[in-house]
Structure formats: structure tokens, C-alpha cells
Image (cartoon, rainbow, N blue to C red; front, side, top):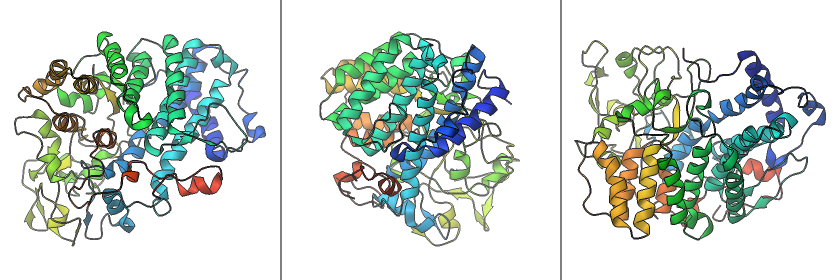
Length: 501
């Protein structure tokens, strides 16, 4: 079993429980801090040495591990992921159809949106608690690290919901909404102020934690999408942040593309930020359960039968050239048992098809076998658990080159853009572009970053999120923001719903 955190397990367990209890009591949309519970945290007596400080910080990063579970459901709103109804399976009150067709409802689908909102602000509350610890406040690097992590959560809220709460301190009162531009400016300020004190160390005990280059990455993402967020492009600023990451020399492209997503991917030189996962100690990385066919249990020797749900759309699959090594991330065709014998599904050859004949299909092999499945993250063979050991990758170097290339292209530097984008393409076994367009850049980002949860943001930036695709009509521009969850509107009367809901 691999160990990811250099933290004494006793302190991890104690502080995890403390943060869990306090976080459950405090949601920033309706913050009601119980002083008696808060006083149980020994803020002035615990955290006087590096070991204890790490124990205070460890649970905050454990909570970041929910990034995968929160984002994958929202990613159903893009053109790279679909959950068709297969007989009675995955009907789920038609919520996946609504997510796919952009007809989601703030009340009916509150579970998806409120899950993200509460995850963000409960974690922000936990961070604010620790920033109140005088021992952390006195440690410039650790204070900067927590400010950057808090800014990252606010960035997630702003990106998905628009006008959100800035929770920069503990409060016993309901906090009001700020405009997206105000939140953008606050996040930028927090990250810029934190940068000088952030660590330049990558890997080892700093793996999976905020450092200088993660802050650069968040800023680069913000600047790349600034025209969406605040109405003013910031392409040059995006390039400058990407330059800082690339020129640091701290990261390099992995020789094997798929090693970024292997069961033991923590050694990848390409990963800028990942959430350390473990099938028993920090579970939740269950992408194989969501996408594999039931009978893939025999292929991989799994102790638990997969759920046979998530697939990719035919057009997205067909955007990959056959010689593109990244095309191997998809499972299609005849499937086999671990011993090499061909599998059947109800006496029909178990052939996973690219095509999905309808969004809602009657029960039977046609429905069960429809849609290319993902094996981008290595399937852990012989695994008896519903979670895997692969760490989920939030940011990696290939994205930095693609972002910089896009920003250069938008500023008219086509030569520089081709150099950056072709640096990635040629590593993946496909021919270099000789000409470039925005459509080509978006498609290349799709092929490189499929199912890494950048697609919604990319589609919005390129003006493609509301267009028609398979089993989805064109949708309103207001769907570029998710609704403020109905649960939060009920708790906090100062919140206002986004337009169109």
C-alpha cells in the first residue's frame, strides 16, 4: 500500500475528526458557528512543531480528494461524456438526461449542485479555522499555502456558479453574494500575495499540496478565461503564468502518456497538482466502476461488478486519429476474459460499440454495449474494492503548453502557438499542424485532456458549450452557469439565483 502524506497517522485521525465535526456544523452560506464546539480545537496549544502543523493541514488535503467525485457528475454537461439510460439502469429520475441536454433544474437536481457548493464552502471554513491558529499564522509558508488552497476553492465556486460568496474569515452571520468580477479580483489578489511565500519544492512530502506552480496554474486558468469571467481578455497574463511553470524546469512531459494515469502515478514528472487517492485509506477514485461494463469484472479480476454507465459520444471518439496513442484511452470492440477467451453478453459477443443508438434504450445487449468506455486511468487488476489507487490529476504540464499555445494564437502569434501545440501533438504520435484555428485548438485540448474535467470551461471559452450535439439541442446562454443550489437559497436569503432559472 502506498503512502502519500508524510503525516503521523495519529495526528491525521485526530485532526480529521475535529475538522469533520466543525465542517459539518458550518456551511458558509448560512454560517452558524457554535463557539462551544470551536473551543475544543486547541488552536494555541497544537501546531507548535512541523509534525503537528502537518497534522493540521493533512485533513484539508484529504477533503480535496472529493474533487473527482464532485466534478465527474457535472462533466456530463459536456460533449465528451454521456450516461445513456440502459433499460432501467441509469434512469435515475432522468437527471443524467437533464444534465446532458442542459435542462437541469435547481430544485430537482439540487443534489449535484449543492454537493459542489457545500464541498467548497465547508472546506473553506476548515481552512479559515486553521488560518486562525496562531501557530499557522506565524508560519509564512504554511499560511500562504492555505490562502492559495482557499483561493482555489473560491475559483471553483466562481467558475461554476458565477456570483458567489467570498468567505475570507469565520462568521456567525449569513454572508452576501459578490459579483463574479469581485470574486475574480479577490482570488487574484490572494494568489499574488501568497506567491512569494509558497514553496518551490515539488514532489515528496509536498506532493498533492499547494506550491508556487499550482498558484501559477490557477492564475493561468483565471487569465485564460478572464473574458468569460470579467469581460476583459488577459491572454498576455496567461502566457506569463505558463512561462513561470515551464521555465521553472520543475516539470517535464512523461515519456509514456498513460503513466500520468497509472495506478502508481504519483511519480509522474508531469503532474502539477493531483489528489492522492488510496482504495482503502482515501477512497473515492471509482472511475472504473462508473464506466466499465458489468462483465469487465471478469476481464480485470475485480471483486466488485462495475456499474456500466459512463461513455463518450461517438463524435468525440471519432475526433482521434487511429495513430494517436491517446485513442487507446477508449475501450471498444470485442472484450475478453483475463485468460484471453472472448466474452459474451446474453449470448451475444461482448462488442463495445462506438455508436449509441438512442439516449434511452430498452434493456438488452445493444443498450449495455453502447458507447466507448474510458481506460485513461489504468484499471487496477485484481482489485477487490470499488475504489482504485490512482491519484486523480487536476493539473499537468501538457495543459500548460496547450494554454500558452492558445493564448499566443489569440494574440496573433501563430508561429509560437504552433510550436507549443505541436510539442504536445508530436509526443502523441500524430503529425504536427501546419495551420491552426480555434476549432483545431479546442479539438486538440479535447483529445489531450479528455475526462480531466476541463471540457466545460473550454467549451464555454470557445463559445461551443450551448451548441447542439448528439441527443442535445442548442441550449440557452444562461446554461453557461450552473444554478445557485435551491438548498442554499433556502438557507441564505441574501443569495440571488442566476438568470434563466
